[in-house]
Figure (cartoon, rainbow, N blue to C red):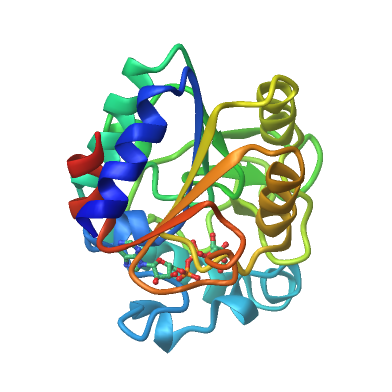
Length: 241
Ligand code: APR
């Protein structure tokens, strides 16, 4: 791994504009379960079933029980050295964007500033009927399950469920940043199964942007990136940065 770490250090030395894309693997060392890992605590619930608009329509109570449990668990988790290294990298770059699939808010806690939360944030709720106002709500456990607004409207987690569109203000951040191709993209801790992510990385490769992957295991990206580093994000990133 040291040879690849030195290679990534070299890439970073010449890089002024850097983007980092993160998945659940970056929060795994903070104790937040991943989605597809065998150790994923979500195994009692199937995210592909519960994290859907239809599950919420059919049984908002069950969906909120799962989110209340996740919020309670995430509330006990702190940023790990991977989150901290990414925040430090941002401070040392001329221009930086963090694109995360994670909804746990740990990147904010670690001090990252310029973040595109592509799948929303588990600490925000949104009215499920117009006006679709959204706000931060950190109460856990929730007083009522499912929670409602003062007019009785069901509230939903302000996260992106399967089959839903990505938040336009977040995709706009990505498009704006990539309108001037960065020198380097580092993809950390994601199984890269989500189509928008695969599409972006293929686009980066097509435009000659250098892409590096950091992951415990090989993924669908491993064969198309410039460099893949096998290892824990919490060990590799602090070493590199
Ligand atoms: N360091 C680096 N990588 C790790 C670590 C670690 N300590 N622990 C796990 N990983 C890697 C795993 O090898 C796997 O490739 O992190 C990845 C986690 O993959 P998933 O559980 O599929 O999570 P993610 O890729 O973020 O899922 C993407 O899918 O279910 C939806 O919306 C959900 O945001 C999620 C999206």
